[in-house]
Length: 481
Image (cartoon, rainbow, N blue to C red; front, side, top):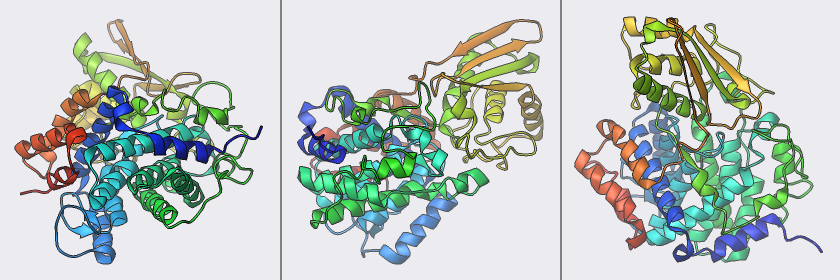
């Protein structure tokens, strides 16, 4: 019996999804994803690359008077200008991406950079309710995460950035659902998005910053895929698993053969993409980042901070530090195309620097700029602190461990007096619910363009999305008074 193509099964799942049938934890997580993306988007809106993206959109896609609500276009967060929906998703998505504080699924994909800006722009323009937005967001997250899950590490091994490559699929699903497409139309949106996908890792490998725009550009393409599907255009039903399809193009195999895996053998079962739809929720495995550094450093900072507090570690008495991580986290973006180390030995993500700084200061500031590049200065610090960080950084040993889960560091600190303390994560610590993420995000309030009181109202608006008749209040509360 011939199998139903993956895009068809995903399209049918998205079309039949109902918010009242979603587990409470899934609805809660969808709200957390909105709260997180828009908060870090507001924090990143004044960065040079976010402003450049905004200016480009305003130059070409401005739509007249500033306003919030249904109709042509959507709102630029913080700025308030009305632009095309795809333009709003692009500029807002760049603001979410620039400081590396977005959400993360299995280290290498960041659904909230694409799906939340596209979903909010479409829901605003279409006049959809908060419940309709949440349903569409869950649909998009499930499509992206399921399609990406086992295949993620193999995609950069073929020269492509995984996040925009898989994110375009989820973005198309979310947009198609909000446009009211039926199962066939959503299938076509996903299939067209698969054909439109692509993003190179060469920029990340060489230190360029084009990655800050990659997800946002993929969001535009995903929205266009849904819009074309709404006009009756069709994609190949087998666009994902076909012999010349998405998986062959971006992993090198249409049969599930993999170049790399985080754990386990180099083989994936394509049937797992659609297994247990509506029962197993991948959105619950999405993690949240708050520090201005790549995802694999996030649990390192959290763990180091906890160990300093728990064991009263005196940084000047530390003799040696051993950090064990998943081997792919130490060879970012991929073992096949690693970034050459900097003169001081720092690699992509500056893991040793982030660890040393945290052990000395007890934490890392969330309102600094992204420090993924060894050429970046890192957190603002006086000369004395910078010298201490540099000295301790030389005592850090990082081991890439095959078979260790990603986001699951093991940290051993040896003191000069001989005392040794160890701590480790299992990889699920940063999979927060709405309450926990909202609590952590309070650290961003001093750097936001809105008052603390307005931010409180914003968080309350997101928390009440399942009862909101529109998404307008969420967009409106990003605008400084």
